[in-house]
Image 1: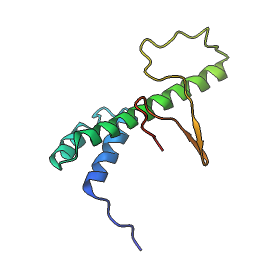
Image 2: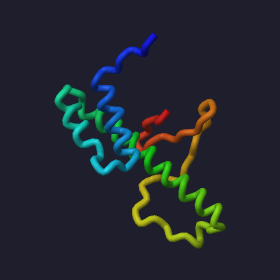
Image 3: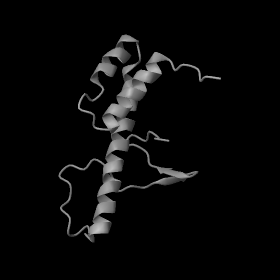
Image 4: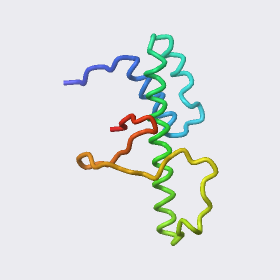
Length: 109
């Protein structure tokens, strides 16, 4: 039995979010036009963008921390980020995975 097809707006939202989170050069801008053309509310699009950016930034922060640990670099040795928008990660256990909320309180999982 095949899975039901996703609605085109869901596909566009997933594509937009993954483009942002993966730092794709196109940044999902064509998906933005499609979503607006489908009548998806700007508030919903903004929520997806916020979550995607949060996931992207959280992943980068975790990679940097793992690199620093492996390299033996302490926070005092490392230069602080010029404009870090992420607070220190405060992950909550949710089953087998961890996640944190965005700056506006959006849950990512």
